Length: 201
Image 1 (tube, helix red, strand yellow):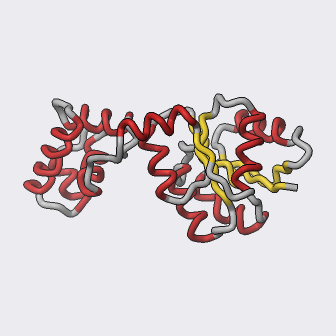
Image 2 (tube, one colour; image 1 turned 60 degrees about the vertical axis):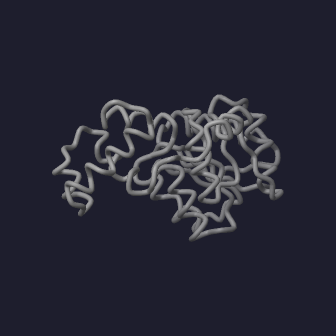
């Protein structure tokens, strides 16, 4: 029997996933959590074989939860589920050690096959996203450019970003200018939106 942990913040979606997976003879949902920062504790307590991680959760997002699992409970294989088919998310999920990356509208039979495959040691990736990720390539943003853009996304001023990140205002302006150029945007807010849509943030 393959033991499954579901991490999904929407109660209805979590319940539906559990009900559908419990119909499979060889799958058993052993735990459910609604927050990304509850994943490691649940994995330690219930010892699942696979953790299904929603990409957007409070506490930690699915990618950071996968990273935490890989460090704390490396025997648990992480499969990230997303509503957002953003190639950059796929690349980041693979970089932190996720074994699978699927969109939520995939048929449940496909999800069940993916769970079995990752337990067998395979990596399972949505084909369309994989092709798009190859076409887009890796993020052009440096770590610091991404940090600055994240802060700029909600309209923070240069002075506010400078204080939050402990950088000089001139350095913040340089990072913003570079990030705007790399995203092809006209403003820093637009650059943040473009980078987020591509999954670079």
